[in-house]
Image (cartoon, rainbow, N blue to C red; front, top):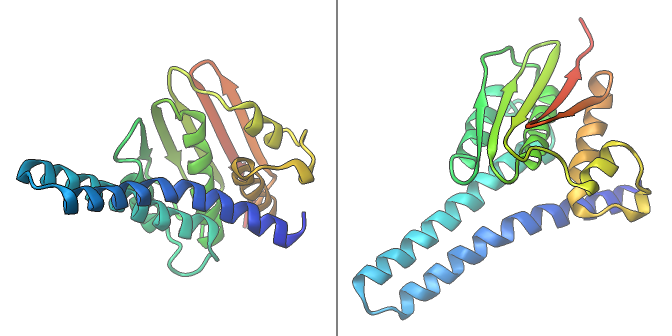
Length: 202
């Protein structure tokens, strides 16, 4: 895929995800400015705070997942960022103890967490198990599974020219996995989806 087209799809995905909480914060401020009732004004400011917190958390995770891997791309930082992002809403992230796979491995792991969350978008738990040799993300929920769009990207059954922003997460995760290991493996079972990348040995 052309780098410009890839960047455009990634930017569209990021903007789509961030615009909702930013709009909620803007609406909260507008309500607070127009409201005379103290209780309603407090509720409006709470809406504003929630929207801003969600936007900031998303940008922190996207910086790790989509940005250039560097010294700040650590397992500890990524764990904190993803746990904070998914501390609200229907999806929860839990991390097992493990070795830091290095900046590129951590960047890949951040993308795998986002992809795992897609698998339980209606509610569930994403469990992350990192190590120096294997990266594993398990997403469990009553309706666990991927949409047809995501499956098409995972199975390489969609033309590059037909990719949509929602699928670019898969493309990026697979590209990062190819740099580091044997590719992104996935399994779909009743109530669970699993993502695995086996990293090369030393």
